[in-house]
Length: 118
Image (cartoon, rainbow, N blue to C red; front, top):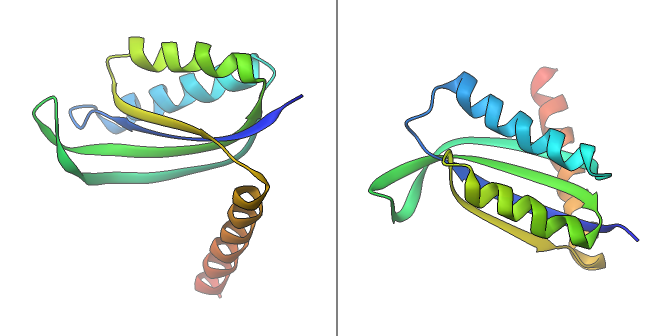
């Protein structure tokens, strides 16, 4: 049984764009290699942190929404802890209401981007 999860992680701001993309690709591949299914991905870019983490006040934010086996989450979080490029992460299991909200938010976002292109 695959559950739906949402993970937000923050990469350290000292990385270059290719290094951030490499870290994102690593975790995306980790999810798919372990039987997970990517649903949605967002790059939020560099944002100011609410409080300093490791003496840094900004970070590159990235969001993954995916389906995976519950046992895999422990493995993924261990990899987040081991990777020095990641300064914070949080994974939450989405209930049916959160899944519905997420789908609605994605549709609105898609509609806005299509409207801008016109």
